[in-house]
Image 1 (tube, helix red, strand yellow):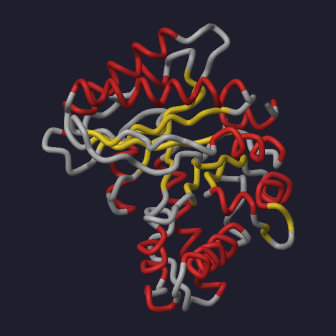
Image 2 (image 1 turned 90 degrees about the horizontal axis):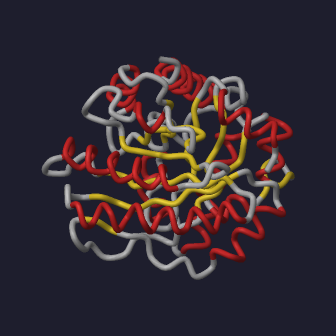
Length: 295
């Protein structure tokens, strides 16, 4: 593991840019960017278009390590290039931004109010490629729809089992058990999740460490026990469907919690903007998220 990158993630001032939309979420991301579904006819064309959007974003002047600590990449983005250079190398060498990669293969059907991750059949080969490309860590997402204790326990157990395999390869795992902002009792789901996460963290060995990516909480500083836990490198927050303004308002009330936003980061960015207009709007979004991440 790169010690300089670890120090950035442990104590750097800034936030994480999540650019890891996969097949299921890419059409919506493209539509918000101004590219309708009739502009492509298969997955290859769709992924080419989303990579062009990501390349434009990551190569923009405002997209730098001054305020962005890390970027979470989709697997295909990791395997492609930015300005002729491997994406991970470009991010670290040109922008001083730590590269992560999404490793889950989507969600299973709902059971006990949650969606576990599908079996990760290609995890070993993906981790090997990630190590070879200079990736620092990984991210994997589960989804909690209801405050079901059995379901939440199953999600956290699965996440930590996978995190152990990832850590054995020298990579930093980001555990992301997202709680739906439409949950019938989101505050209770948040609290159940924190209790289970704390229990699993207490079981980790002294040299074990993970990162956590959690939905913005309804209760200010709910995640403080996790942020302060010695087995946690950093706790970051996902926007989960809130607008940029809503996300930053909630985030600013949660001390030492930083953003890992996707849709909120790219809000208002469109294909028909000039490069100057695009970068100006991107800078506005980055500045707003950065400021909210400093509290």
